[in-house]
Length: 131
Image (cartoon, rainbow, N blue to C red):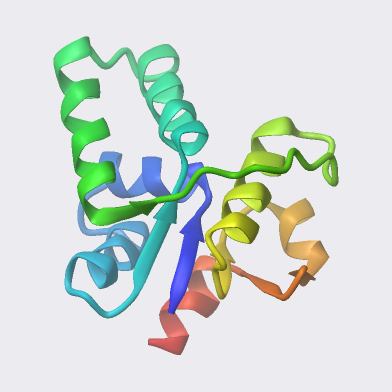
């Protein structure tokens, strides 16, 4: 399955080893699924890690490399304004541009969409259950 992880899933996987978010990312590392990312998503992850969790430049650099290595980079060509929160719109843009099958998120407003342009929106629980 080709999917996009919401930034909160990626951040949880990095900060809470052994959790469900890490289990989701391990599916990508193990080659079960393919993760689609964009520069905007990587930037948002790094920004949150720096601003909210005080991570230093060296750690941020390692995170950027890790995400880039395990994910397939796509460059969205269309800006969407579907949801109120702009970072959520960046997730939708990445999924559409990368021809993802699903977006994995814990965001209730995103999940409420159910599907967007053929891309399913799944909770982390639902995604892991499909494995």
